[in-house]
Image (cartoon, rainbow, N blue to C red):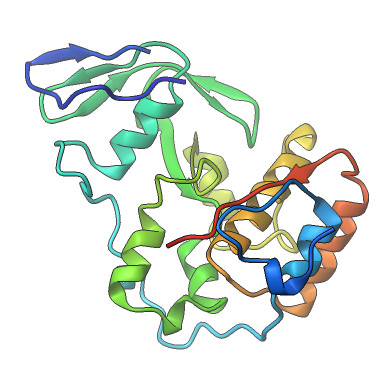
Length: 218
């Protein structure tokens, strides 16, 4: 994967390539078995009352370098040097959509997925956050698991569903997907309801080799 090393300044730019609940939200966790990580998730009933997608301002240019969050993810996740036009418009690269195992070379068929969808985050605790914290969540570039480039069809199939309702169609992706889901919820101290916890526990039982690390969000 490649990282952006400078702001776009010309018409065409190519860029190079055993823990207790009390310590659950330390700055950075040790590697946790998936089942142990599930146990750390807080429980709460979910409510979508008052939710609007506009409550989460996203695809901003947080560092004011000319590239939106969407562009930043595309640049970071490209497996080859991405081509970027004036205005930080990413026009070519190579992306692996791990939900369905598809490799794409044009960004037009890709969505940037919030690992834990905005509506699900709202249901799970973000409804009580400030607008600034919701904006930080929706544009979280500091954890690789938070945002991911995937084919638009799988992202739209997922919609706002949790792992009790939707898992990636590629079977080999399900353990890593669930690990990323759990890490994101732990990072942002988001809760799970009973049905979601049961699904995560069942998945974790079949993913014995998967471990989870996360860094608590500021």
